[in-house]
Length: 487
Image 1 (cartoon, helix red, strand yellow):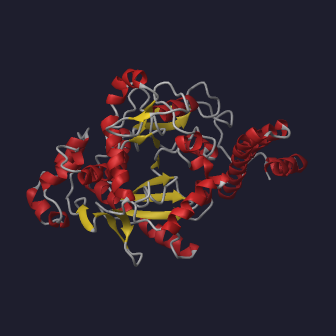
Image 2 (cartoon, helix red, strand yellow; image 1 turned 30 degrees about the vertical axis):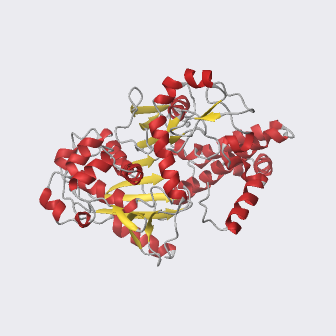
Image 3 (tube, rainbow, N blue to C red; image 1 turned 135 degrees about the vertical axis):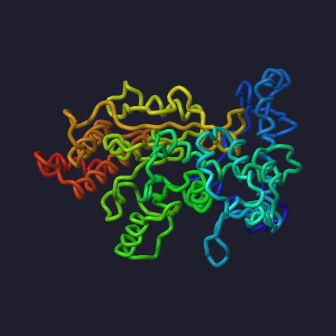
């Protein structure tokens, strides 16, 4: 809901925006179809909302009573969502990592123009104690254990150790504003802590010998308002946990901001970071593009680990398939998170041993995938229901594939990717004229085929086919049908 002080012109523009057909998919369920009962799902008629959270509605007292036990478990979390929405909509909350001039700082959280929270920036090496860290409480104790270190840190000007502990753990929160601080702070810290947990679970931090060159982590599908915005905090927190091991985080995503450098300067800058031999250092590099774009650029070298924060590999809307196949065939340790139980189950179904294409070797998370460092910022998974989701709720670790595409253990190359593109294109050609309801499925298939073609071209650049030719070269007539089918 817009605050009363919002201008009439802004309200008019928002009303017009909601009426556009292309925005209907972004409207809440009750905005599209009207209110519905959280218990029996009936639509139409009169409803009463929960008096505490106002986020769910019921068609009558019997449905409300029937849902009381289930809703009682999530009502408090939904109330916290309302507190956030209220403060955010009123314009009292500002958060971000850039000032008015565009200069990048650590992520800042302001309420009513006052900075209310900050992470410690000068905490020294905590890697020895971090090895046994298994909960939010462990990490908070780790960060607040040294009073002298806290006193000389900039955070001391904003909050003391007790306030930091209380807000991070959600203990005895004294206002709606503190609830919002708890939500945002755990959301941010969840990313570096999940990264650390993934590295530790893969055994990448066990080296007894001190590593001189950086441990390279590719963060794929990086979102500009999530991982990229939190990069300073991710870098700083991770640095305190891994100790002397140098870290290089490479954020890969089509929405990353441009560096402003030409490709040769980018390559030199990346090379300097990649070969930097400074113990205890942590650096970040942002690549604007897809993983296929990175693959055929001079910046690519095989990483020590790839991290994907809730990528939704199973969701055909996002053309992840060739990237996933490539990483599994290359035996690159791949950590991924899921934001709900449904997301987790669909991911596990996709990478199960019954899938001939994506059956993966699961290193950790198959039996106990709950992430101890999941974000405490719970939001509705579906409007008007008791289903909740949060960032990094579950964590899986994959390394290798059960059935290689090139039989006999060969290298996955451009020819194999073109074969996958041909297979998808044949599905498109067999569809015939799509009905209006099939248009979305057709779009997904075309995007998937295009992504395979793009990945095939990238692989052909870095390691041309040996002993066989590309499908496009061997059968140009067939390939012309593929290009026509995918547009």
